Image (cartoon, rainbow, N blue to C red; front, side, top):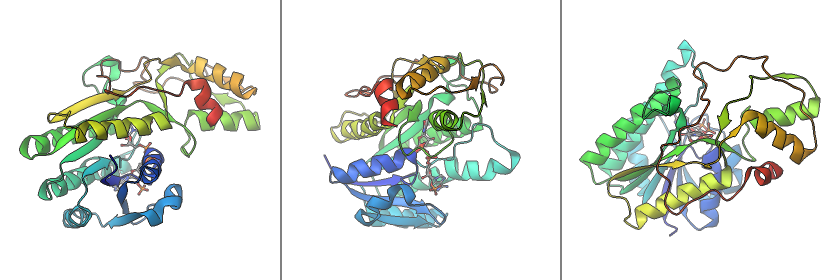
Length: 294
Ligand SMILES: NC(=O)c1ccc[n+]([C@@H]2O[C@H](COP(=O)([O-])OP(=O)(O)OC[C@H]3O[C@@H](n4cnc5c(N)ncnc54)[C@H](OP(=O)(O)O)[C@@H]3O)[C@@H](O)[C@H]2O)c1
């Protein structure tokens, strides 16, 4: 299947893993970055793909897509904010709505046939069809609506993958496992919520495979116009159980103070479970193996 792909968000955690795997599989890549993007996570492949620095304008995006002429676009660029501050409205809308819309306009103008988009289970508070946990989730939904307009008014076919919690090596953000590793190392007590929320954790290699499986569906003509699939482990586990497993696998105790912190506003206690399964894909890495690998 390897062909020519354009990726946004390739400097991030998931995008960099996807780009590295695609280079190994022989794809030709065009990567859209911006002026201050750090190329650290894709250092080993920068000379294997074309890097296009987007200047923020729609015209420039149209030129980038015209020059790249991709067979498919993987759109992963996004700004994630669990809770936003007033000063973050503009970057949030710019990254999650404006940038993506500029990309869609460029895709339509240049007749790119396929796109893979990314949503989040945070669009589904309390297992509802739509109820955003936070403004970030609402911007994902807004972009999804704009995407539907472009699929209805152009030949573009798309798959939206709804992701849960991705983990693995290379995740430099202060997420669960990096906090646990740090706490185990320093033995500095860490305040936690009661830890009863269920987490749907999917290992990075499985997430990358989901993107490639979605691409395959598009190339094989198995997507009519617009499909949405959940990339779920199908076995959510409570935060407390995840920590127990982490301690068992690493042989290290984490001095956690359970119940010292309140849950986040609109904390998801049970992840969304109404998504369609992505055909031809399932999780291969169980959590114990995943923790060993990180
Ligand atoms: N990780 C998860 O568990 C998870 C869960 C649900 C959904 N998702 C979704 O999956 C996708 C990838 O997530 P991730 O964890 O890999 O994210 P990440 O590590 O935060 O990477 C985000 C990427 O988006 C790029 N970006 C942000 N704003 C941009 C803009 N205005 N113009 C161009 N590039 C921009 C960043 O580029 P710079 O280098 O320029 O900053 C970075 O490469 C995102 O759409 C995210 O919402 C992730």
